[in-house]
Length: 330
Image (cartoon, rainbow, N blue to C red; front, side, top):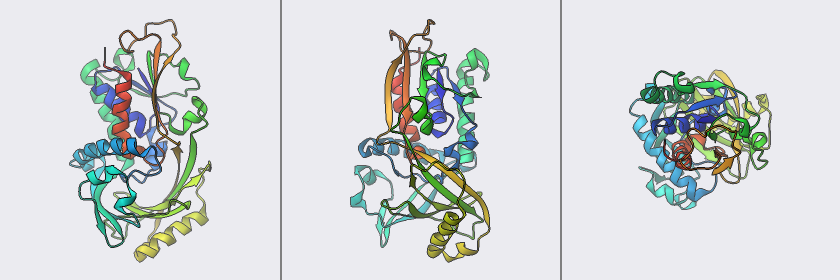
């Protein structure tokens, strides 16, 4: 079985499949640290993702996992941190919100203690967990047809991937690869500054504007945001946008104004009208469909993409649903 895509969706799906007994390899166009996932601010919260009823279930399932992982923050990159969503009301959210522990109304919005994830650390941990799960069943990574390995491989045709089961977690890449023109970029720009002592996160999001205000305290600095520019493809940071981000955040916490800038980041969220979690058949390549569901005809392709701005938030819920579409290990 080959999972195509090495961001948070691909690696989490690979972990779930490997821990279910499947022999899994990951093919990724680029290393995890260069994916959109690595750029993400890392706060658990359903943002720019549909459909809401399904998203709520996936998000809550992921929340339970992150709450457990927060017991080992240095290892997993996951911490539980207090913060406020300014301007957000409970009655604006779906039924899932009532099941978020500690989510409560405050004077200017909603407060909660939520998972905040250091994405570079978390992606490295996912990769290591995937290798360990594979080794426990198939031996050292690389044995038994590469089980547990993450390879940098460019895929231009899903039907040409030499595996009985192919799982498509390519995010924005699915636009050309599937091809699926419904997948489109939503550009997000961030600024990382030295943390002047801020220990809580903050968001203020206007869903009718491409500009928002948020800051997340991470071990490597304070992440400031942000933007949500529809159909914008540029990965180059815009100095004017960066200055506006810092200004908006400093209006909330004045000490941010004098913080030294450490880095600028840009990521393209893989938006879609609805997440695609779907199973279909691929043409048989004339080889036994190793890893395919018993009795299946042809080879299996499972899609898991289109997570918008909430790939981290729904990663575990979507990974487990994708694994269910693959079926049990032989």
